[in-house]
Length: 251
Image: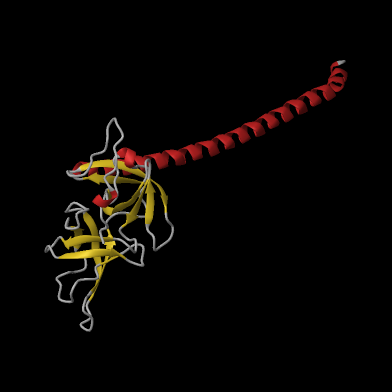
């Protein structure tokens, strides 16, 4: 008979305890949810870093495979900065005279020729890309051996062959490779592929445009090429760069 009275007396205390437990559980769940959201954001960030690292490793593997195909000594360098001026297509790399780099040295990526070193410092250098307005490289059409000069153009993604006659045997799709006649680039490196040929008999030369084989705007690592007569990259002691007069401009 006393149980209903006891139940009524204890009801407020039980209700208060239940409410407290409920609020505590809800607060803990909200905090746990916030922690999970934070962890998810951190994991997403780490995942993006892993994707970037994987992509970089893939580029390095391609570059190393390319270096194995090159018969000359090579040195891998990383691009530190790029000139955003469309007419000055230049990049800064993290190798200099301390690593044996010299003025006029050719640089490549895994797909072809990129340009040449134009200024050398102790620990970094500046390289001019093929599409720079002041760049020129002797090339030949792989299909028939036709020789010409590929120069940089106003378009940052194309090359021009301004000295081909209208009757020259050049076609869209022809692969251009370095001829080795300029004394800078060893022969046989891919330079570009012909994308347009316009022949006007009223003009002395045909208008021939090519797209560079190298990914000039996307790569982060490049190969510095040493020929047999060039100084090889040092192993223990720092190397000194050849005299400036030993390298002349390609153009």
